[in-house]
Length: 316
Image (cartoon, rainbow, N blue to C red):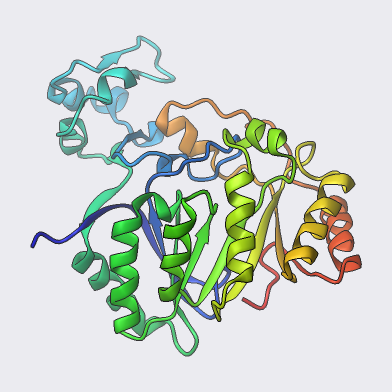
């Protein structure tokens, strides 16, 4: 039987902020949400995408036209602008499956956003990193949304448990409830994102309402899963940082019996990724969330007897 394959857009080692101990992070492509502040736009679709890094391009310096000649769809053309010499027609790129331009580019200016891997290939990478984890480490699956490739995810999780590897996941929880709960038999730890309590505000910022997300969080909290569940909330000034929303979030968590939250300040580290993908970025000029807002939000959770950890200052 042919082994399942999944699209992995990154594997990072030595993480100490995404689960217990030192961990490897596996980023799986595909996401049902379209958060306007998304930090990993290259992971939104389950398809390899061409990323163009202008600073590596040698078109002007060496009169290089290798990618233009290689593209079978004529999707790359000269712009006549020395500041940004090449134009990529992304509508034509979407039809491509060979990515000849990236193979022709010897300067790594044009690269693909992910790699198709079998379960065994990914396990080999995880096993390679295992010796660096030390005591208490493991692997965390993130994305994108890992459940968008749920069959591949489940197959890898099973292999991890067979190898006695501690497993964690970071998920939006926007997945059918049966699949969501079933996967947790192979998970030891979870971060579940919660962006907004108001369904319409949630839709405005992410493209979907929060009904399924809240249902799944409550279902997991009510289950007999023995692992640790942490609610993660990106704090976006002007979107979800109001006292009303944070209080509603705390009351929801009180109601379902959850008592650990990790709030994350907004950052603009994804700027370059949007440029490389030719995507617009609504939050390109948005400032990082001020400390005073983070402290105010933390106090509301603490007042509701919910442990609230800010940014990377966590015990997990």
